[in-house]
Length: 421
Image (tube, rainbow, N blue to C red):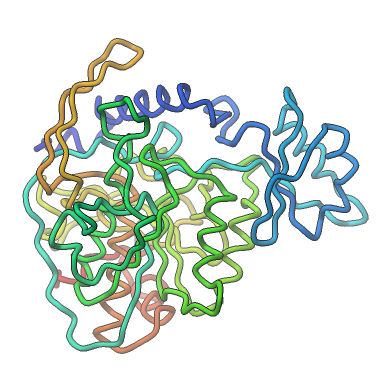
């Protein structure tokens, strides 16, 4: 178990996570951008809002663009080899007849696991969790966790905590290794399993609906995520009352990703969407957390090395890694003990020559980041809904929006686990 200092200040674990993620990204070759550009994106991809295509058709033709897919309200184009996508997008966003065309790179979204916003540490073995008490016989509440999926063993979640009140499809099984010949866990393997476990701790009576969009290295993009969100309401399905997005990314010129914007708008006004604020320790907007209608969740520092569910009467302070700013509306402790994948991870040598030591997981681990503060808040909203018989919007307002709540500058309202006084 890591000591308090290593969990509350930048250290080797966070640097190793960043290098590990970057090394795999370079091997894979499906991500462009980085710190110099200020955001990540898919090479050669351009997204255009469906109803804006006539405004940019000529420019797309000039770069030999061809449409390769269509999503909710957006068209996905592949541009010619060697085209600089950010420069092309800037040129296409020039106002025409009072309209700024909605065009964008296909931004890469990560599970909040790299130097531009990822889990602040590697997961580490730790002690068993403490469950909050059941909320009584309140109304049905579903929390959708859109992430890396869930770890399965013989078709069932690996841990008993997740065998009750958890819904998933076989396609949502979590892939642990990013490459067939790689013996090591993906950089974010277990991320979705961990988050589902936190929701279960906070609101034992709520249903957790697992949906996979990130791979085991925590990678997806605006187009893929928009499709998953759109599927939640497709075919007349009942949309989950709460959606947890412990993922995101920076964007070109801090413009909202068009696929996400369209998909989130289609969910309706009865669904509460929460998203992690990111782990760069910056005030720059991180998407989708910074989007209108989304509750951005930052992370508070843990205190005295205690498991988060046991902390009471703490003085809230921003965790070193948490993004912050006027766009962040809520915060919770981002240092959690939860269920993790069962795995023996051998040592891994990084390009710098540094070796990531072997990791032996047996069910419970600690992991820090805004990724894990977010399901704490989602679970608290779900628990209040069941306890008081109120809808998601009212519960969120009670915990986050009303006057008189304890707040931290740049992080919004402080949300404690519902099992604390």
